[in-house]
Length: 434
Ligand code: ADP
Ligand code: ZN
Image (cartoon, rainbow, N blue to C red):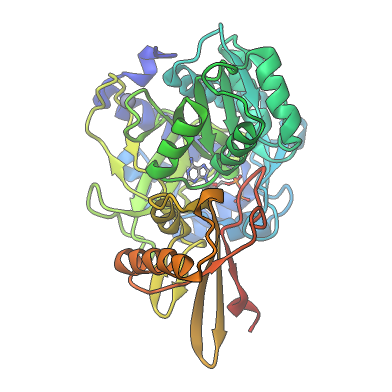
């Protein structure tokens, strides 16, 4: 099903016209109402009269996270605070939080975006959806919550944590959909299995809505198998509104970005020039219909690529490939770029290991160390040390062949690697303190 066919399936030509109209309006709004953007545009030598269509977007300066931090808390608002009816802040994965303010219109547009995602996953008013993203300043909980209500489904506002209760409610209420981070979903799945609950017989769960952190297609398979569901991606970031900037459709073949609200570009993070179509680069967004705190050419630091071919589902909106990671998450170890998401998909190939890991990097005697802590599956335990050595050797060789450097695999005590109820911490880099 499609929530808003008129928009989601509009012709690319009509879409560009709409984007042009909205961009002109947005640029005027920020120039007239935000001292930050006015100064930025003036310094860049660009005036709203230079922006006549969406093609002129590249004339505008970029905005970065530091701008939001420097203007903490309310310096980026483009309406009087009396028109702001909600505040959220980023979870601070990468430093001091940033604050975002929403007008009534902004919240209603955000809801519309989440409603589009939920409908694309196959939900309708007949569903009971458990929102296990954290509620509060983090956008995940309340963002998903509003979308569930918008499509008329029943929302169960669990927030994150208290996993036993999550499972109990899921069972008692006949929950059909679960929204949380993929790492929390994995933990919930582990606890369900431990409790001896049969996901197909004892639960009504059919759809998972996972996002807020990078996850791979291998993780999708793992979650689908363990929970007996279809698992879909939801993407978003606080600065651009929150979850629902884009979502997958039934084809599970790319995350549709709601381009009538958010204009995406992919640039080379070093030169800031557009990359060739289909190439991986840094995702940049301009909000086209967000009034409280618009973002002009905001550099997300997320690395991905865009596919403009029309999707089989009938939606014309661009599809984004799975996020490789943020450029901030990338570890450079002995000169080699390593993303935690690469380790995730390799680890999932090995049935002897649990799907949890922690990368630990240090620098000893001027050489980078690269350790990966993993746990064995209960049935992989053995009295013979040679068996472990075989497993760890196989894993480190496989990682070396994909990533380019060889990690040292450390077997951790069962259950000792943190099971996250929100965004998982995948790496510790001790070098930053040296
Ligand atoms: P913080 O920056 O503190 O983590 P946010 O909650 O706003 O705050 O996080 C947004 C970021 O989370 C995105 O920029 C992206 O890196 C990551 N993210 C969100 N959804 C997804 C997703 N579906 N796939 C991969 N990464 C995601
Ligand atoms: Zn599609």
